Length: 326
Image (cartoon, rainbow, N blue to C red; front, top):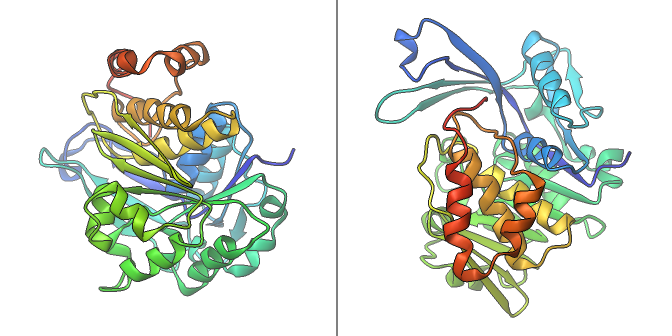
């Protein structure tokens, strides 16, 4: 079956402590996956949509773990290339009381060998939409060319999560390149704080002024809320109050919820609400993924009046246990 959304980007094997303690004192390690685009694909599949992930992995145990994990979550991985010469990327997360440190081992990875020719893959050409993030163009010149080709293709509908990762970029390169790519997208998702860091835009409307021609622009303002701009319309939805267990993966969950809302035909308020609900659940668990909200509760929450939304959404998210899986 053709995918509703094809997500393109690198996924690494994730190693971290099985308990929230520093690695040098951890008796056991936990193994999972880490990748912005595959997180979106997994969340879309969990919400009942047809999602594919397109990338490369090494011909190694790590690559097999990654593809098996996504396949088990209902994601189409039929287009993933197994590279006999390059390894699967690795991310090691070292927890500490002051926050987790991350260590990348991804230089020369199989995914970094992706190039613009991948834009002609059947999973791209037949998809209803394509999703990628600002991580991809930072991986290699070939990946950068792939991102531009996808975003510039008038025959594709492409969503782009800016997802700025400073450690992946050479000094001074991220801001102009991410702005250039964002201006090509049909849908852009960006954090207000990262936009201010990149482009000096302190408010959501300042970001819109910088990206006036993007069809749908979503500016996320952390725990405060999110704003969608479309043509002359502007819609703001406050975020639920969440007791955060782990912030990693919340942005990807928001993107998946927002895109799923579009697939369901929801209006701007509904799209933003579903994004908040999915992000809130991930904030309540350890790891990048969480089970989606039950369909019945989603429909009820999408329909509540504005003056009851924050309280009811906060209560629904608080009911999620503060533990989960990678």
